[in-house]
Length: 113
Image (cartoon, rainbow, N blue to C red; front, side):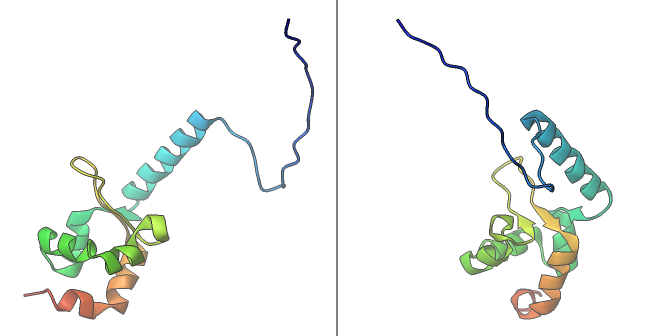
């Protein structure tokens, strides 16, 4: 025969932390991303291609080079969310990507026509 024990516990959270429902957090994140896109904070590959004056295939070739990807991938603190495959768009944080292009023109000028 099994016995079931009940207990209570307290969790202390810092003042700047809250516990929220996972579904709520996912929905809130989606809403923020949509607002960022609408307000021009996040742009797509077409925009980045125009910004660098490179074709999308050429820009993609540059951005997928391992040393460039290491610098720019959002998973490493960068400003580009790389496509995860067909149907998954590229996303660029506008100000951060513009700053990267402005500070590293040699990367893009080498490939321009």
